[in-house]
Amino acid sequence: MKVLALLGSPRIKGNTDILLEELIKGVKECEAEVHKYELARLRINPCVGCYKCGELGRCIYEDDMKTLYEEFDQADIIIFASPLYFNSVSSISKLMIDRCHALWASKFILNKPMIDINKKRNGIFICTAGAKQGDNGFIGAFKVADLFFKAINIKSFKQLLMDDTDNLNIRNRVDILDKAYIMGKELCKHQTDY
Image 1: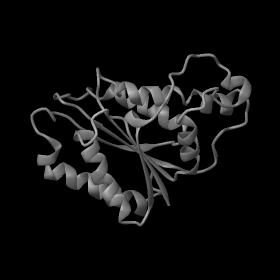
Image 2 (image 1 turned 45 degrees about the vertical axis):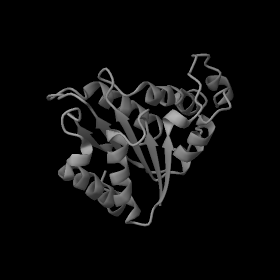
Image 3 (image 1 turned 90 degrees about the horizontal axis):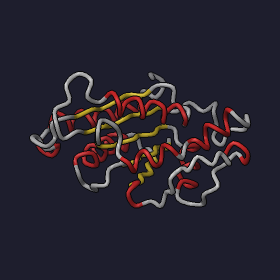
Image 4 (image 1 turned 45 degrees about the horizontal axis):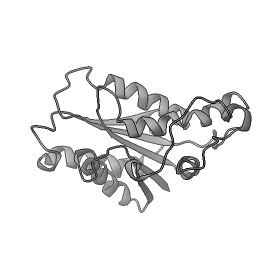
């Protein structure tokens, strides 16, 4: 089983990364092959809306997204983790997501998908927020994550949302770390339950 973990936080070893790492620990219990990418360290050009992907079936840029497109295709499970910035995902996360337009164009315009659309993939969305969010605080990030997962052929996904990290650092929240670990462990065992 192949697992792709995407860290969309510019703060390596910050709250989002800590939660992601705990989930990965659980996934590794199933002896899964995990590939983790820190988006802040990748070279990803912004989508410029040139729509060449609708003609070529691929993006014009030769950057690190090329590797991620291959990883999307090979992964059985994709974990996407981002902090909440201005009620959405981080800008580096959005940079990657915007470049998934090439996947959409290859699938719906050219009818020649870049990735296997018949492969069942499962997903998890992790999002952390510094302030308390209330009932609808994560809705903007959720909508963006939902569209991202649809672009990479994940029909449904689970989420792990954590707010108030400015006051209660993730490192000190054993209950949440345990929840992430168990979620990762169960993800492998119950791949078809999504």
